[in-house]
Length: 142
Image (cartoon, rainbow, N blue to C red; front, side, top):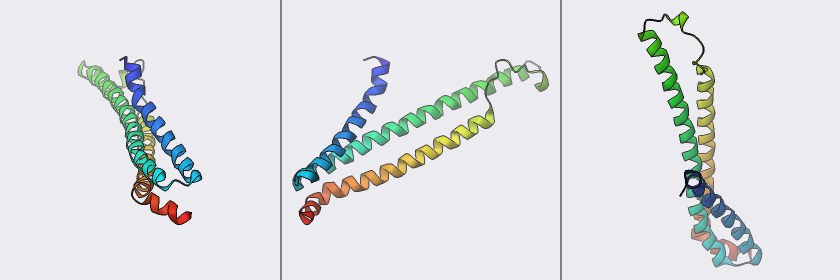
């Protein structure tokens, strides 16, 4: 399995599961099938776990790449200082990171992770209730 396919497969499965959950939920409601509605709740729980795990993994990988770039930058600067070059003489060429921009990027990643976590909590709550009590809720509506 190629690296590209290996990276995209979890996301594809998660998105497909989430789409089937949403479609199946609305379809079972429209057709008035309480047991089917309840079963789609189980799929919703699985899809939520897969989808949000994939999203948080992608955020973590982005964060790791940024940290690696920062460590590389600090390493280059440290080597220059260790070689006896005074800080004001370190050429800007090769030193590309803007540390304030990187800090801002980390803040954006944290906010994105918080939003994903909140969405995960909501979807898992709804899907779990649907899984446990969905048949009763649909029968009450009919």
